[in-house]
Image (cartoon, rainbow, N blue to C red; front, side):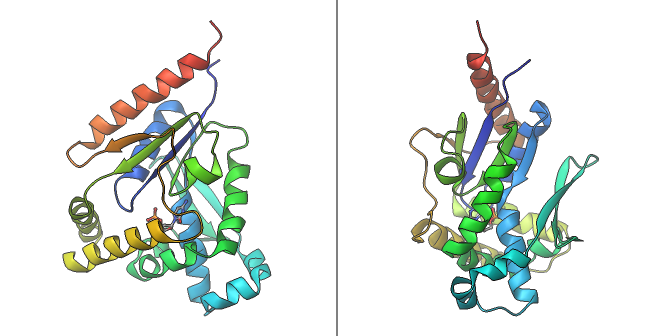
Length: 231
Ligand code: DC
């Protein structure tokens, strides 16, 4: 039987980490976990309960009221996010959560809370997880680490098209501004800033199709898995 590995995919907002992670998981029959969805679910909880961010650091025990789980939809090969039993997949992708999620994810207590859950999910390996600190903090021993990037203009265009297709009314400048702002907060925050792990492979997909990226990453993954097989 093939060895199961952990694939960590980190990178900037909206550069296609999720699509790549999903395609890899599907090909390898692995779990696919979008760690950003967990930060988004915490953000949604704080919005719904009207909890100011300062209160989270003062009373981190309140995070104990947040139960996040994923349910697999085989048709879409997608793990939908549930917050306290409710499917919040749509809500966590909206602009309100997008605007507030970076400051929430910069809170140390929130990170401890979620990183522990992410490590638990990966304890049997056979996981593709995407995020910002997966190769550096969550799974520093991941067998394959990919650092994805693309120019902010290209990322904003892709994100804008995606939202438009879903019928969400936004303008391009707003999306671009949100992406640049998130890049800035994610890269400069004190707790687990977005960093390329020393042993990560960079994948700049500014001029690559989804298919090309998936093929390349799958080649890398199969290479690593083969190298772990006893000869
Ligand atoms: O991947 P995304 O855009 O859905 O992530 C939402 C936010 O969560 C983003 O601003 C960065 C943060 N995040 C993080 O800090 N660490 C992760 N592992 C994943 C996401």
